Length: 271
Image (cartoon, rainbow, N blue to C red; front, side, top):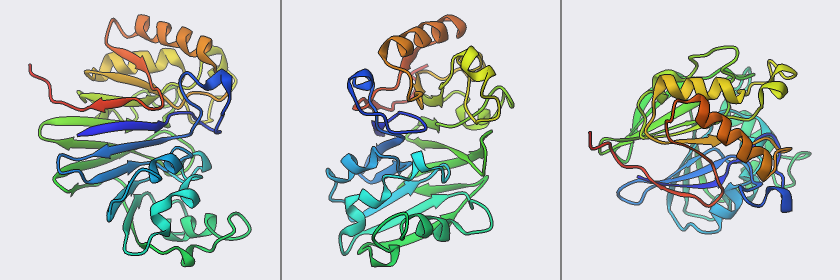
């Protein structure tokens, strides 16, 4: 598999000079299978530039949850407006409304000018929770996370290599949330939004403090970890300081900052 980060900012898209080094688009990761099949993890504002680059006839979009920073790019995802395309959405049932109804509600007036029924692509919705299935030879496993509203993390495995995607997870309230899909992953993208001081003022908001994140990495022991869901208020200096703290707290395990545009070759361990 090969992954590319199109958006790793959390909560709110934040363009500008202060966020340019690591990116201001919200959550979206492109994954290409060995055969070239496209899997999209979340559809924040980063899905717009991704959509401008793809001509795929079939696309699977794996949504973690329905908070706006993870779906607000959908109305600008070019493949939805192309006849003959087939787009399959996967995600948790948000509540009383189905996943299809919730997406259709957002992509309709007054929130969006074009009713969802007028999009040209063929669209399919699949509700999942603690499930496992296969997409083009990629094994997909889901696990619930600690976050307001039904929220999932995903683990993708192909040819012995694994990527775990856990962008919104409050480890301060559940230290082992998502550990079943994060454990031993070759690549882990995980929520690391707050400093300890910020988190203490935001308990229950659904995101992790940097020290809780570092301790989690030390327990689940991925081969490579990228800090994800950067706070909109954090510029390069703040993120660099948080990275240093995370590395100190994780006992020397490899940690880096998620950065818009980063391409990741997900390869199995040779151990």
